[in-house]
Length: 162
Image (cartoon, rainbow, N blue to C red; front, side, top):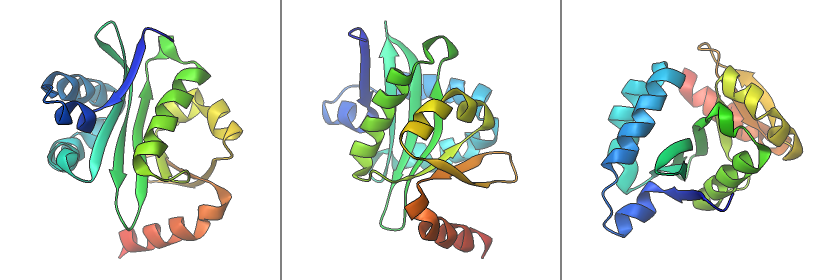
């Protein structure tokens, strides 16, 4: 793993590094892996990158091999659109990106939204970290949380249905 870099958009911006290539590459992967989220990506995530949203990504040889989109707020801390390239589907890569994500969120128990495909790929890590499926959305995405987060999930789902 010594040649894999794990960093985030906000850190790069703080160093005055142009992040457009990362955003473009993540968007391209999103079009393939999470096509229902492109409008959200363009209209919510990208404009919020200077404040309550972030993208953490894994890079090898200047290519993105994984990423996760984050939201940090008083109401909820959320990990969504988690992706690791299939040829890098190792527990150590999932752990690296998830540890960085929970660190940025300052929350060891965030809500996680995963597609079925990504859920299957990272199932071992979720089990090892005591995260479980708590609900399934209409678009076949899954809400993952730790058992002590059930009340947090219920509040969020109630807000969304209102």
